[in-house]
Image (cartoon, rainbow, N blue to C red; front, side, top):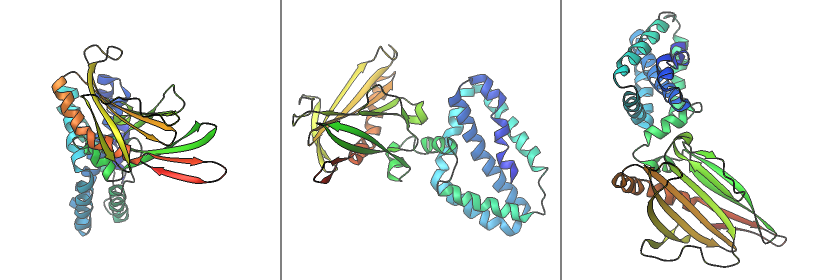
Length: 309
């Protein structure tokens, strides 16, 4: 059913010209994807009565997985466009309606194929970066939920420790994007497909049995996460290197596995210190899940040992 893809023609000239930013173009495409799908479901229900029940069931299944995303994306676009939002939506709906006029209403096979396509989408078969946008807005208020539902990517990096090679892996939410870091034995990720205000960086360093570098202070605690004991430090400060108006909240998770000191730095940025603390609490369950997912494999001539964090 071609009308559902009308949004590809619509990346909305109004929206793009108003924002001139890849982030907003991607958001607009996610809007078109979800609304195009809903419009096509409505079209099928109205024009193919024999498929109405299947269309409704497919729609309910999709909404049970990603129903919050549409509402949150609508809210975000309305916030960005302000009084231009209604014009944007009307323009979109007009293009969708024009697209439906060319549909052969006698072709029930295409309608059946589209219902099956929705079932596949409910199982996560959605193209990038639309899927990542949908996931971000679906779990906007519950970041750990994305991880818990297994919408994740796995990453690996090779580490040299005392002339011995090691490989470590960790798991991140699918909506987070890996970004460049100048350190070879580290990984860095940013939320919301690289546009968000949350960053996770993991460093590995050879310490020959020393303890993690963070000393126990008033703002630190120890906590078992997964199979290892972590020292967790919390701090809030102004970060002038980013924006003098932004405050940075940092949660640092440190532990030692054999000869490796592992520090995971979790940064959150916000203009309001009060809001910053709220968001730090909201993201803590996700950060703990990421820390728990860390997995280190040492290899040498005698053995292969896996240490699970």
